Image (tube, rainbow, N blue to C red):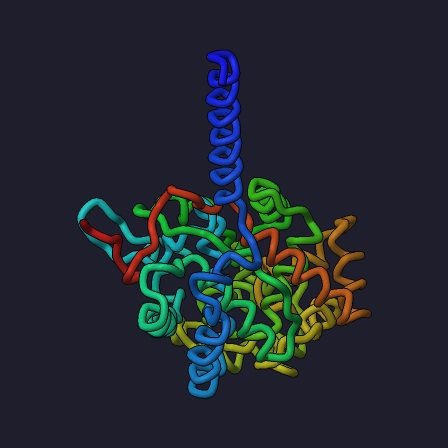
Length: 334
């Protein structure tokens, strides 16, 4: 072979190798519904087995896990940072104001992680566990199912200040909510659909008592609360009572994932300020979206699934970034 042909062959090989390497790296950075197909093909069934058992013991576990997933994703992306405990160099997000004494479900995440480490050690991230468990638990409660893009990796850091600043609060106005969601790449339809996650679960009295007795320091109740419903809530949460007492988001079907939440908003029975403002804010485009979801559960389910996928795609760590924690509560040490 001539020297020219040898050089041409070498050049072609290098170009092909470079292309393949580049394609491979790009491919690794994309989430995929088949990400674990070869390395941990039973990942969904393992997660389902653990959370099904957990749901039999705790009807609130679905609401707890989906809240963890949401609070994780909107602070530096879906990276499992909310699961980290305090440690050297780590200020846990668990102690941020939106999470402290209210975020829960960590023990179930630990159980899922332990089960997965037994069958495919070092493969499935804690961030992906939150995404998978959320979908399965919504489905178990009667809600929609969807295919989850996977391949997230876990962070080695937490961001407590970010949790304080970015997580929507129960007291937010619609303007604040839409601004925060827009910062995550989520539109007003996503805001309304994801708020529909409050169709199951509970709220502590501390987060809505002000609406019943002294709204915005006016000395009178929130006028957007139905008066009959207000009396029900007052019996549950008397003025000066225990802040930790729980009330159902949905008094009709509290443990079922359905579209009752939106019918409650239409009837001025949203329990949190951040719920009711979706329907009580004059001229807001969220009103039509609430009406649409109240009239069609299938429409709500379809959009909720799409919005959950969008939520789960917020700035994930992929490829060689981050790590796969062996324990969701702490980073790996080598």
